[in-house]
Length: 123
Image (cartoon, rainbow, N blue to C red):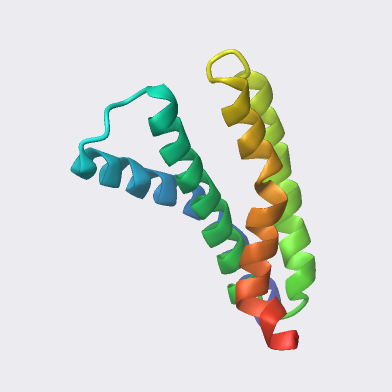
């Protein structure tokens, strides 16, 4: 039962991490005085999207008690579904480079989160 609860906690933390890390990025942007809109701000926001995925996957893998690689694949599948949905919905709201970069950097986000927490220990 403990293993199942840790897996559920890992999933909850990974999903909660996305908006919290992005919110932190917005607060830092306000502190830095970055104006909303424009390619510079979108590049900055893309960095925080990447960090959110990285933190979420690291939490998922780090909190899970067993099958850490399977947990990484699970969060990848969830994030991929969300990314595809957001890409389709926001296709006309943002420049193509931004929506595609959000989608295409996902494998690196999850792999790096997995590697930082679990993969490099095994290497």
